[in-house]
Every structure is written in C-alpha cells, then in structure tokens.
Length: 238
Image (cartoon, rainbow, N blue to C red; front, side, top):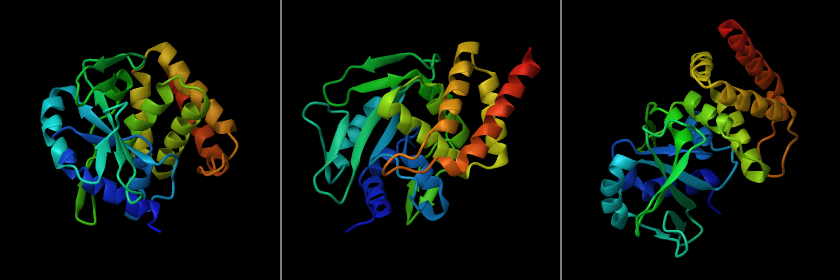
C-alpha cells in the first residue's frame, strides 16, 4: 500500500502543469506535511490538496486542466477533482484575490469548467520559498500567513477542528522569525479579527486528541506562549 506521503507527492506531480502557473499555491492542510523535513507527511489532518488560484490567473489555469492526469472533475462540483484510483488524493481548486481584504468575505467566480469559491482570508497569505522534493517544485505560502488565515476564520464543528490542527501543525515547524511575522500580521488586523484569533488559540490550547489526527496536547505550552505574546501585543497597542 502506498504511504500517504507518496500519494500526496504523486498527486502534486499529477497537477504539476497547474503548479507551474505563476501565483498558484498549495494551501491548507497539506502545507505542514510538506514543510516537515523531507516532506515527512506525519501531520495528516485531511486527505485532500487545496490549490489556491489567483483570480487573475484563472483563464491560464483553466487552459492547463487538460494536462492533468489521474484526476477528473466531480460531476456535482467541477472545482473538486477526484482521483481515478487510490494512488492519488482529491484536489480542491479555490480562489484568492488580493482585492478581497476582509477575511470574513467570500464570493463565487462563476465558470462552467472551473468555478471558484474566492475566500477573503486567503489575502493574508503570501508566497514562500518553493519546496523541491524528488524533482518536484512545490509553491507554498509563508507559514505565518497561512496559520493566521486558519485562526482568523470563524468555523465550528469538524471543519473548525481541522483548521485549528492545520495551524497547530504549522506552529510545530515554525521558527522564531515565522512567529514574529505572525504577530506583526496579527497586529494589523481589526479588533474583531484579533479577537477571533485569540479565541481560536484558546480553543486549540484546550483541545483533546481526535482520532486519526495529530495530538494537540504536546503543543499546549507553545500555543499558550503564542497566545500570551498576542495579548501582550494588544496591550502595547493601547
């Protein structure tokens, strides 16, 4: 049986024509797996890949879809591409638009072949250094912005838990400069958005282990320390 790491890399190789388009980024739950040394992929939160497509590159990306192999668009949702066999994992196409500055805002880019749900929270992310793995160049965001994107969004239930665990996975591999960057970005948010970030960190600091997902309990001290730094940042701005 193929390991999850191998399935993830094979999937990214299958969508390589899209990854080569300027501005396209791998975002979401697979980024912590890819940022681990050697893309170890031990921080499995969900088994799908999110590709963020800049709205200005939508036409160019759509023109490359015919080059993808081993995946096909879902009949019900053409922005979701499903694997033709179990060697790959699902791919979700989502939109990002730097003009959509409100993290709570979202809109739909209508298209018969590749509709995109465009999320305002993705404006918080910026491109990082691409990762080179097994001859594959993978564009990923800087971890600070991606972690903040997961924390500023008010989600509940299983989806909310997954987003918090993605942020946790990022915390586990972020260096001190990454944390400093997160705090600077946090300070630029509106008051209600900063409150959402702190609330989500508080929830994360109390979460128990969920079946089949990374255990948050060993990271509680790290999360609590970050929460304290954010609260200190708020006090300094008063």
